[in-house]
Length: 423
Image 1 (cartoon, rainbow, N blue to C red):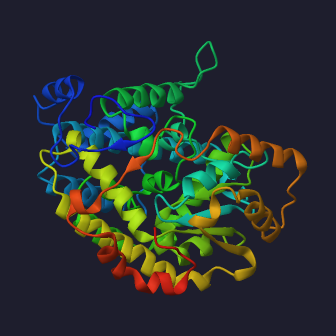
Image 2 (image 1 turned 180 degrees about the vertical axis):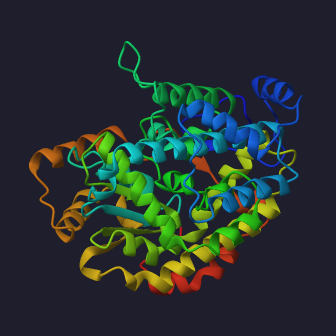
Image 3 (image 1 turned 90 degrees about the horizontal axis):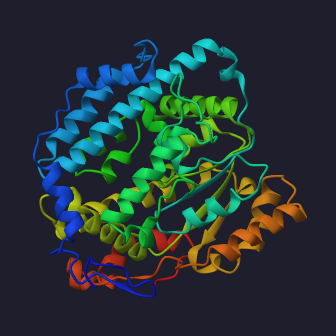
């Protein structure tokens, strides 16, 4: 099946590496490729200051300006980006700067924010496509727990003078909804892979990137230079900044007991536990082949609009190495998380077995799982069966020139450490 429209039951990319663009996709590219996008830092900062309606204090006490320069330089180093992607990344930088400015101003006005406790969070740690999204959305159904919806992750701090409209709709939510509708029009199969609709629970690394200190840029562009830069940062400082953002969000809209999740935490367990020492952690585990094939298929599909060409060999090499690094760090550091406050969840045991796993997680977190919360969980499960948006038919050999067994052979260390079943 090509790009014209998804078959909800079974999605097969017959044009993954040689895309046949729809009329809508061609029109989008013709419009956006007409002009070169300027990533000048001074202009982006001026735009952010104007949007924030506050001063120009970026709170640059620990080299934020250097990270901003490195971030932009990494984007400029990727010569295969279309102007559509450069525009998206420029808007993202402006948005991050605007939110950082607004956060600095908010804390100046309400310094008590930094005294708000982030109490006993649940944190889901695992690779993309290993059940983390399912699990975090499920736990977020507990009304006692604060979560991070996608719309808020993209614009966590309200800009001065930009409150809800006459219907009570936050303009940040309205923007996220409009962007999601545009994505569904231009790349509809994204929903079957990772549907980031406005209410979906998102990763807090988006908040960490207000400090320009996460791995997120790697998902947007081919930036090994940024990977190396990010891996060299002292993440204890940046995770402390993440906590400050969570404190501000708690101040703006409670409660103060969070559910968090990100694959990045796999290689940052030391900083994670130093920042949230009373956290209870749920590790999800899945065959790395399933993780990698899902990730690189999603990237290749997105690249039909993001890049001037698709390079399946690069995607395979980079992301198999990246997953290897993440899982290697997880195996190395797993014992930094106390056994009495953590559980390991195998993907093949997750679907259909959620309630017993939640019982164990809540017990280890010292939190009562009341009947009304159980009903909330069951309602979520009933409304969100696996494959709700269709199932992808993956074909590593056809699209990426490697067999599942050959790829799986690189991860023996992970199968030795955790209960993981080949798929």
